[in-house]
Length: 184
Image 1: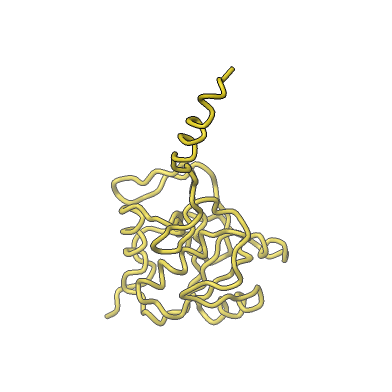
Image 2 (image 1 turned 60 degrees about the vertical axis):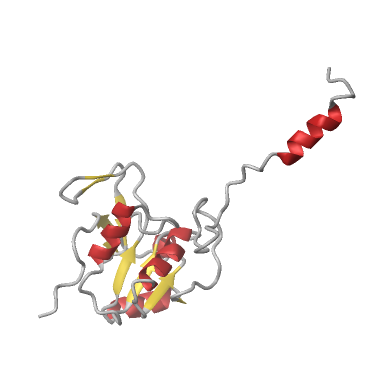
């Protein structure tokens, strides 16, 4: 039993301790850094929000679809190839760039994104998606926007909405190298 003499001192010590809160967003960038599977906003800085019909139209017009779903348990070999623990399915024709949707990219993934989009025209139509209620796609739009791309669309319904609409999927493999050919 704690003596009533020590209670005020205990209260003082507890109040003086910093809270070990796990912030959801980075203070500087505003990007989501934890709990990536949660309701997302209706808009995203650096891009415009689209629905399923607009996604299909953009895909049919030649937009580059980028799936940013993470790859838990992955490894990246020295040659840049990926070892994936769990198979992943995506929208047919989409390019899978896993892990680029984290709020804080480690140097290896930041370089991976730079290489993937090297040689792409900055006006190229890009559609970014993940799953529904997935902050990784919201973050990825902003990462891509910071590389000076200016025609980015965000499909917040992601692969879940695609499948709900009874659309087909295909096996995905993480892309390596640039997704765009070098201009001649």
